[in-house]
Image (cartoon, rainbow, N blue to C red; front, side):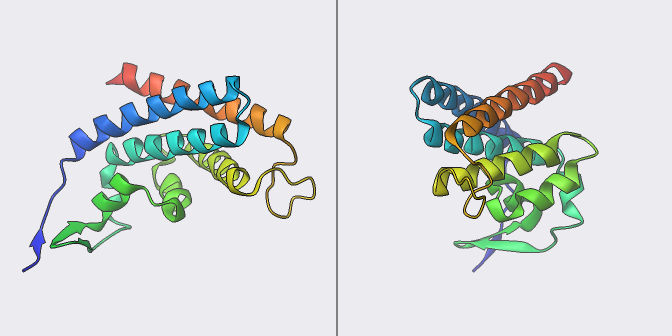
Length: 161
């Protein structure tokens, strides 16, 4: 028998915020150690967690787009909640456009995070075929930019609550 389950989105949001902040810390350590591709991966994970946090705090903006349920084991979870909680990489761009009115920088930061995600897996590519990041120096600057802007957004939201 399949049971409809509502998630504790408030508790998950708090956890995702903490996760985002910790991933940013690790990204900074990796940068200091010269592990640029690993730092890019951690910065991406931080943004993915931050996006989850932002989506969970704006569930009403996702409810109309993501209707129905997602089957998870013996449970059916409202799809908009599942997407906000898990934040699948292939939905990040779409979700960012849905919450852009509440978080103006979200679309641009999602694009940057996805470029760093691509760089993490493919490395630098001066020709721009496998990655839009041409070299490690550019990647390092992009990682620093993402870290600073994510911290700024999360800090400003924290003071509003």
